[in-house]
Length: 272
Image (cartoon, rainbow, N blue to C red; front, side, top):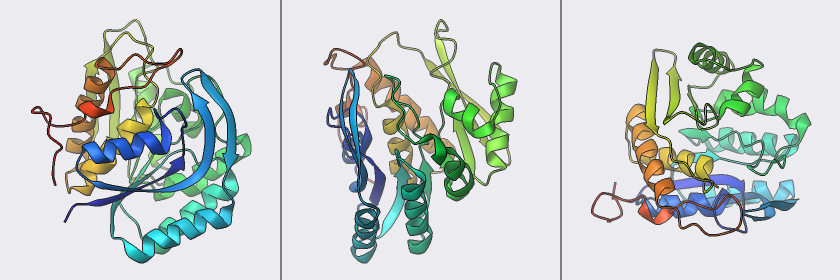
């Protein structure tokens, strides 16, 4: 049976990030994607023009409908907007025993718009992080979650371990925001047993909208197929680099990546 996966996040009317990016990624990776919409955004490559949160009751009912009819092999969360909605989502994940959970702690859009209420940060730290099997912060997000400044590789590993102490099973601290003059991107995958450094080619482009959503969705899809975390992360990084390099170049701001290349080398959707 094709693995069934779930994204709990906000939409992107421009199609490059959020729920839309997640479902595109799931389809290309040969898993069946479903969604729980937490907020609707008016958004394009130039930025976010509006955020319209869904009523909490509607979020709960969406989760109940999914749980009543499907067997979730893996799930991810993205933009959850505020403390009330984060708590509702966490309660549902616990109630329905959905695992493994990939948490993309979305906080700020590329254009600078805050996608989560400032008062919700404590809820992310204390409620969402502890239920994550893997959390995928970029450096600014990791600085918020670890409450420290990150400048060096030693800082990165230390910050990841501080996030682990909050209860996460593993931390993938992404390096795309760091040392933009470097020819490589260094990500740090930290578990309680080991630290693994992963490098990929840095591509000089502004077309990186939705990369965080897509990376976490790729990892979710691979975990749903039963692949180990390290292998899932390596596959996700390889495919994401390819998708960035073949960006369609549309829009007048931070354009989207090419989700249609997230397949095997022969261009076929991978099956479980």
